[in-house]
Image 1 (cartoon, rainbow, N blue to C red):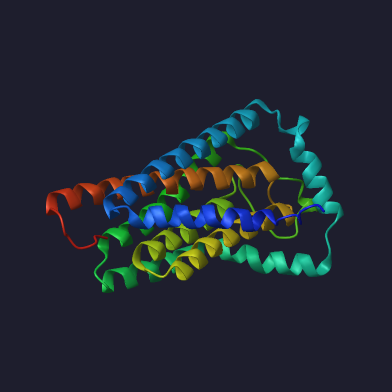
Image 2 (image 1 turned 45 degrees about the vertical axis):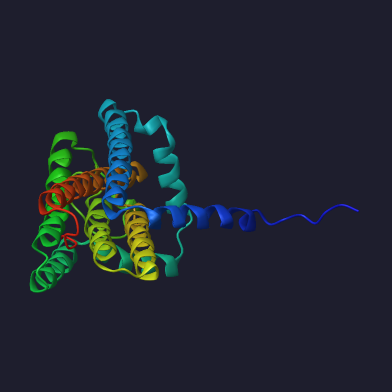
Length: 253
């Protein structure tokens, strides 16, 4: 008689529990160091992806790749309800909304005496905006044809500012929440929420026909690289401050 097949998800759970137990057993400084290493690797990978996409667009290779094909497929498969949904979702990446979210977060952080985290929020959103504006001016890629657009836009296409700012703003907000709260559930919710918003806002730009898909992916890569680099800098600064403060120092931020 053959043995019943085991669900692979159950087989992974003991391993996941062991990893979590190991992480919890590490001193906080070592956890921070591990976080910094992971963030540095993510920053490097995202920067490399952005560089490759930028090179491809600069050479004019995008029309011979997946870009135009995906754009045509999306335009041909639009539905009224999905168009209304993405018109609403895309507003979460508008500059005005990003500024308001960042300003509210900064005020709250200053009120609770977390100036370094407030500076982190400002650096993430403002830095991403400056990077996007600089690359747009340098590359000058035209947007898709106006007949394919469902909203009115202007300016160069590459990279997508909405895609970048949704990661830079909501991703930074998630990092702040993860840094401040102890609840694993709240930390997971913040991380999942930031990823979901970044994906949906970026996807809305391609769906609405105002960006090529590679514009969106490049915006994600650029913001992830920038945000991860800031995390590395923040963690390094925190470790230096802890070392100067000595063992048993309170959590910084």
